[in-house]
Figure (cartoon, rainbow, N blue to C red):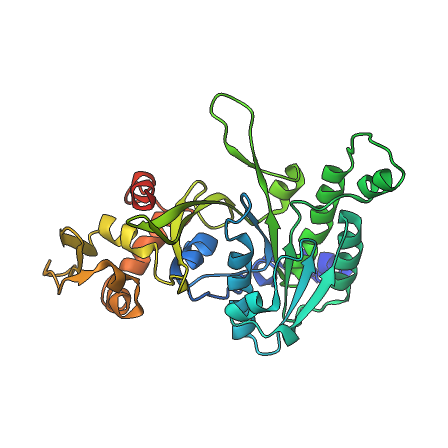
Length: 350
């Protein structure tokens, strides 16, 4: 018996395995959404998507955080007919119609109301402990941003006005305990959070809840937005996904997504800015766009901006060029960015 076999046999942990064969270090199973640039923000690839582990969606109020979470959860449920969503709710701001908007059958959602961090911790650990790796479950917490600690509630009930120092510690403990379960049992967890402004001359957005969330998260997004106007009429919003932390995507990447009042998330938004920067699309005249044959340099038929938000415009680009590879090099860790997108994204949103 080799030393490796001896060590494996003597281990008290039944999942102990040679690293090259360990199921925890093989490539994670990813579920693509219908929005290519959301997949890029999650994984660095248009073919990637939602993966096991903790993803934190942070931002001010009314910044589409719950919608992004339901978009991802809906894709997960669609890809797995037997999958279930475990929805922990502390804000009660998502009516049934909100789920249906993202194609989520509410009969496949287990709604668990929560009032404090400890209540969430005890229930979620119990649920995770009972799950098997073969169970298809996605967990959404809406939200941890305003959730009180048990001590804070007890102080209010006892009419005490002392400062509560236990909340950050409780949240840190929650995510410290859940992180191993998420990987070992292949469970995606989407946690909605708030941000606050750091004090200083140049204040920046900081994710609330303490350092425990940063340590445990696989992905942290900080969401920004600006109004999408046509003249003086507001048609929707331009959102920017600021990648604060990621296991796959270069940190500080900025990815634009457009949401309209009438059509919801524009599935192919965000691609145009990158394609223009990479010369896969050109702007032959003001207000007009055209695909470019990257082999011959030939410019295709001109179309208006709205046409660049449709699948028919992008299918030939994905099929006939190396645009997917360009996106991967631009955003994924381990590759040199080919163009600087920061100014381009800011100009696009402005």
